[in-house]
Image (cartoon, rainbow, N blue to C red; front, side, top):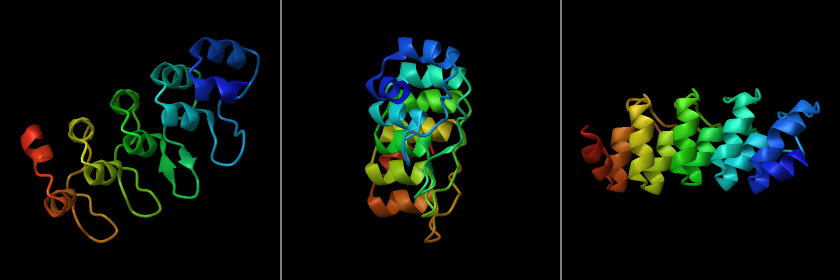
Amino acid sequence: MFHVSCKRGISNRIAPLHASGIDPCCKQRAQSKSLLLAVLKGHNIVIRELLDHGVPINTVCSSDLNRNALHEAVDGRHLSVVRTLLERGIEPDAFTWTGRLALHIVIDGRNGPIAIALIEAGAALDATSRTGHTIIQIVAMVGNAKILIEYGG
């Protein structure tokens, strides 16, 4: 019931379920944590409820790739979720097992507003990818300098 509420965005069920003793950090099955389900569906209200009830923000959601909630929100192009996670203190420079940061993912996806939100939250522009390229080099390679121009970099 808890995971279904997270997946469907039913925020008014989170507090009562948590109060009844259900652990919001428990796994329904491999790679399906409550926070991950809410992030994947873009349910910002549910995400706030989960974080308010103690779900750790920097935990790995997808264990096979070492992706956290921010990586998933960026990949899903959920700007409001990205902003919520950043406001709540998620690490903007956490690496996946493939050596990618959230900013690498967003640059590849060419989403300027999310890139700007990450940069404004302190995402490192000098961090290198697994291939040794900085964010600025990646922006140049994919031809998306508009992101840095919009930001003023």
